[in-house]
Structures are given as structure tokens and as C-alpha cells.
Image (cartoon, rainbow, N blue to C red; front, side, top):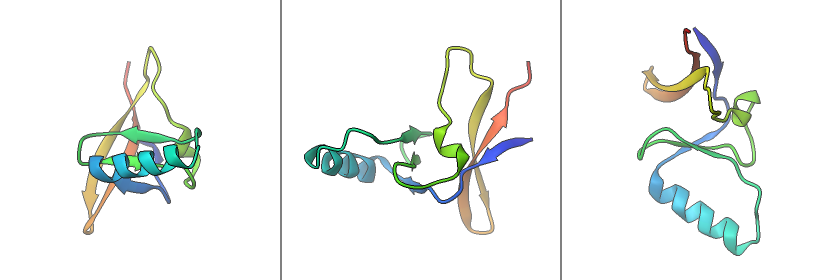
Length: 83
């Protein structure tokens, strides 16, 4: 069962991520939030998104990100891990 779905965040690849990070570095921006799911899919929630944008990892993770495809769109969902 999904805990949260990513809403209003940019889904980008490695190349676009690299470009955005260089631009932010040149502008002196030190606050950003990106979450890597794979080489093809990264979440850039630096400037917008819902509560899911603050999901991060920990030493004992209790959730995982999964890629979902449907209706011609790709998304990520945060799913609770069963213990």
C-alpha cells in the first residue's frame, strides 16, 4: 500500500540532474533536494512538491521507492516495508 505518491516534482535523468546541479552551484544555491531512484529517474523536488519531497533514507529504512507506469505516465510511490 502506498504511503505517499510524489506530486508536482520533476522526474529527470542523470544528465539533466548534472546540468541543474552545476547551475545551482554557479548561483551559489546550497539548498536542494534530489532523490535518485535509478540512472534514468531522479526526483528534483528542490522548488516544489508535496510532503513526499522530504522523504529521505535512514539507517533502518521502513519504506522504499518503486517506479510505477500507468496511463502513459511514469511515477514513483513510497511503499511501506513489511517487517
